[in-house]
Amino acid sequence: MKREIRLTGSGGQGLILAGIILAESAIMSSINAIQSQSYGPEARGGASKSEVIISDEEINFPKVICPDLLLCLTQKAYDQYGKNIKKNGILIVDSSVNISNNISANNFYKIPIIKTAKEKVGREMVANIVALGAIKEVTQMVNTESLKNAILARVPQGSEDLNMKAFDEGQLLIKNM
Image (cartoon, rainbow, N blue to C red):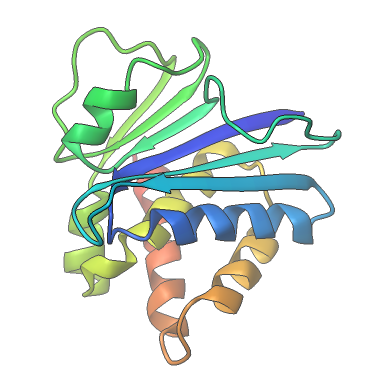
């Protein structure tokens, strides 16, 4: 089992943290994982990308070549990365993203990640955790307990309940489809 994951959006959406959490949750489950990141020179609003490779074997190359799962939270991210996904891959986009008719992924989910963070959880800043809940529900690649523990280990003290609600709402986005 080897999964390549690319989380894309803009700076300030917490995708680097989401990638770190995803990798740490795999490690907590005794699965090999590596995370890398890149972002534009702007602190907020510039391009942001976090890549995670999860494998039950040794990971020899730390970069995602062609993702099994691609998350796009912005139109710019989709325009840049939306065509580069494995044919049998999973594409998750925020409902604000306009997609082309030529989706290369077999499994496609257009869900209101940012809107859910704002309206159901009450804070847009937890959209990354909403996305992790959705990713968990779609892929089942890491167990729920490990992912929740990794979230709780990384989020700011005092925001644990907010982030757990965000995670649960992300799972519900997929369950209620």
